[in-house]
Amino acid sequence: MNNLFAKRRTKKVGAGAFTNARLILSTKIERRKRATLAGNVAKPLKVVRDINEAKEIKKHIQEYITALTFANIPVFETKIIIAKKRNNKFKIIMLQPLINKELVMSEYLKHCSNNDAIFRFKETLSIVKKIREQQKTGTKLGIDANPKNMCICNGKTTLLDFYPAFLEKKENLNSQEISKQKRGIMRTIKLKLFPKRILKITQKRLDKQFDMQSQAETLLQKFIQIRPSLEGQFRRTFEEFKAA
Image (cartoon, rainbow, N blue to C red):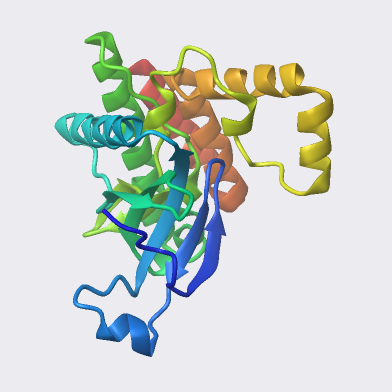
């Protein structure tokens, strides 16, 4: 464990609800390192002061990934790293290989065949169904149902980004840890002026990630937005899913 990202050059390649994704660039210094991280995407999740808390969060996220895998849900290759910062704080970082943008579901659906688009919709609904089945056993799993959080890996629909497991054990969410989806000056102003309101909205949104019926309906709308010509087929597939 060390300050892994202090002197590495990175480039922002994406933004999610809880983190910015940054590609670690290949430089002369990077190539001289014994273990280069160039070509990987770093997704910082949380900064804490206590190393034991950092280790607990890392363990919890790994257990969360294991639970998804146990449910036979494909999860993109992911490593969890603890990086020590100069101010003696510790940053939890999710590290993943860079994936071709065309294989991210939100982009893939724009150019794949009609049959493939329907097939991918069925696969995403299958993921929802598996999570719902695990919930019945008492396992707390959730999903952020958005095609941009999924990808095609080894021919299968795979979770690229998943619900931030480090929040799952929190009884109360800190307003500074909530979704950064609304960025910029207005977001900062709203957070300072209406912290309780923002927290309530965020908590409601997180709760929805455990409501699989709601997530399935969200997926339906997202797929229709990307491929409106297939709306009828998507809706028939969705009705079959509900009836099963």
